[in-house]
Image (cartoon, rainbow, N blue to C red; front, side):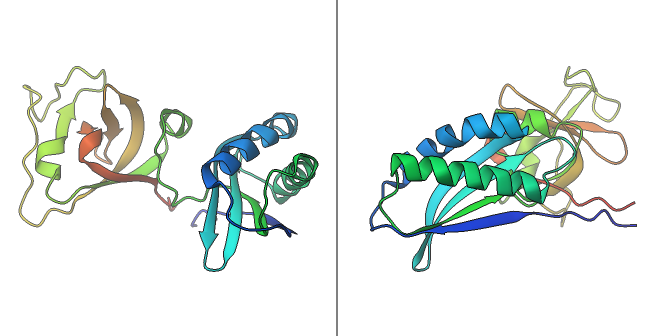
Length: 203
């Protein structure tokens, strides 16, 4: 049976003026949300203040072990909305959205890689970079495994896709480590990676 992934959203509307400082608002909203997030037991993954069409959106992404519940989003949204009102931080009409990050959100920070270590991931390489970026590794990270005792880079076979799937290991010294379904460990130069996303698993 396929695992079902739910991404909960709680939305509130606030009317203000126009032309906000997007970076400041996102960072300040994250700071204001932090105390409530700790009390609720969730972690703030990211915050952004962006314009989507004619509307401004303040998006707060949260996560926790076991998954985010809709009441987590609702509680944080109410607390943050009250804090923003008290500070009068946003001089624009905007929509506040608190949600889980979603399985298709790319992993980008060290915290992301640490949080999802052991998860199934898809690593999409930049065009033509699989040949240059993929290196066999031993499980202990010495750069040696049974397929390539010298730890040399793996040449790409004709037609091989620029996507690598496997279990995420760690991010270290500019390389992302993973193990494929056959149990072979690899590392990929981060500079050769376009995106790393969690994969939907089927059982």
